[in-house]
Image 1 (cartoon, rainbow, N blue to C red):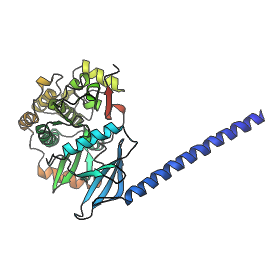
Image 2 (image 1 turned 90 degrees about the horizontal axis):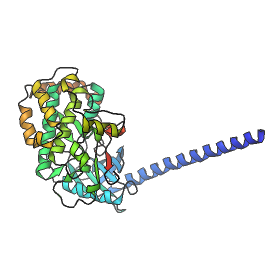
Image 3 (image 1 turned 30 degrees about the horizontal axis):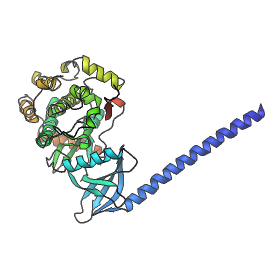
Length: 359
């Protein structure tokens, strides 16, 4: 029995030594890769410090040598994702470079390192996502929600005019910052799932759909080809619901729970979920965006902007109120990871791929 105990002890010790060595090797490799990447000069860009990491790559704060401008650089590292997805992402970055709306994150540059690593440079933001705003400060007043929604719709209006749909509008992809002296500016981030609607080259897209279950339009769950600008507007309605209630339209422990409730049940009336009253006009706007039938929603971002302007509290979140809020919460400002998209905590608020080929 004592020999057996010794053997078990030695086995456990060996396991611990192996785990420690593996962890040490992992830490060393990460530090080595960081040092190697920091030494790279990506054209005129010099990497400074890592500010975020996602499934497909890492994001660094960087400096442009000639412009002396801070930027965020995202590198898509080999081995992190399927090569076909990397090629798709490169195409999408090229498409979104054509967008210039002030509420869309700006992509300055893109290219490949000598090692073949794809990178792109974006504006560096400081602030918080709308997900973090509600998580830290609770549900927001109707007038502030309208102020945010107007900016989001402005960004989407330009993208849709270029034939692009975002496909992953959610609080974690909407960044609150101060730009050009304007506090409470919203930037739409992470056009990584953007698609050119009406594109006939859809062989891969025919078997899967990507997005965040809490904010995905019902039609995209039934047919990955069905998404159009009205699918983005459904997500805008779900964001509005979250902003004023602090919760999702449909909630559940698993992705399957959320999808089934979205398919079978109507949303709970907004007035039953809010801690402070909302006007009937605002509730009607949100309810219309969340219609299961796309034909019953606003048909364009321009339409949604028009009906938002008719809400009694539109314009009540004044410049004075915006400035006062930001002065009071200046300590919350931080550099963003513009390629990561928020702070998801459960499977249903992360971006996922739903495969239709196995159904």
